[in-house]
Amino acid sequence: MSREDTWNRLLRFAGHWSLLGYGLLLVEERASRRVIGEVGIADFHRGLGEDFDPWPEFAWMIASDVHGRGFATEAAMAILAWMEANFAPELLVCIIDPNNAPSLRVAEKLEFHPFGEVEYKDKPVLKMRRFAPTR
Image (cartoon, rainbow, N blue to C red; front, side, top):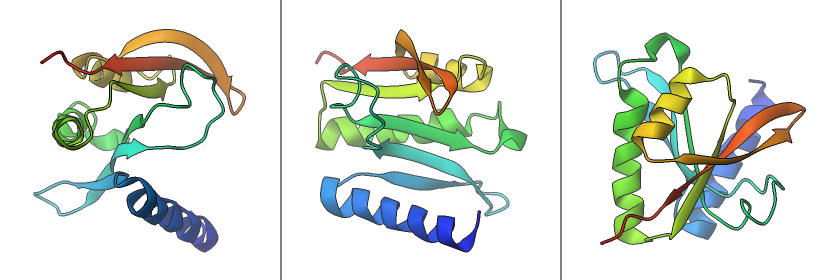
C-alpha cells in the first residue's frame, strides 16, 4: 500500500475503536512473529441495503500462504466470543466473494449463512449473516 493508503487505513482502525468500541485486530503467526492478517468487527458503510448496513460487519483477511492452517478460524472465534460477551449483537453480517472457498469454509465454521448476492465494487459478493446464539 502507498503511504497515504496506510495512513488512511490506520485512521479508519482508530476511528472504529474510539467511536464504536470495536474494530479490526492484527493476526500474528506466533512462530515467525509475522503479521498474517486482520480479523474483527467494523462498520464500513458499504451501502448494501437495510438488511446489511445497520448491523456490525465481521471481517477476516488472512495471507493466502497460510490458508488452511486455522488462523482465520481461531482468531475469528476469539473475536466472536469477546463480541458476544461485551456487546451481544443480535446479528452480524459479512460479505464474501462467492469463489473464495477458504473464506466460505471459515464462514461455515462461524455459522454465517448466505442471504443474498449483490455487486460491490463491480464484483459479485455473497451477503452472509450470523444470528446471536440462543442462551
